[in-house]
Image 1 (cartoon, one colour):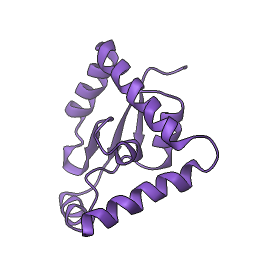
Image 2 (spheres, rainbow, N blue to C red):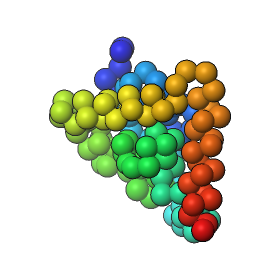
Image 3 (spheres, one colour):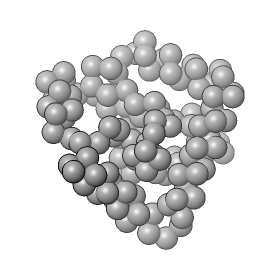
Length: 122
């Protein structure tokens, strides 16, 4: 690994970081109203693909009004400064990568998302 931490927007870049087994923080800036509408309409508890696939928060998500310089700096310093925490994240990211396997990872990730949405609607 060349990097100790990746700060990325949500999306397929999080899968790449997962496969690289690199700790990350996921950010996505929106207005409060957009965030609120998203919370109401989107049935998933997470937006980061590693979290969705693991069905738990592995990587911190700073979304909408939660994304501030202070919070992002705090998360980054925590992951860079607390090696135990970043190592725990690496172990969990490795488990997610194992679920994805090599070929067809995007299809498997999409299947997990669809299953979660369907289970939340029932």
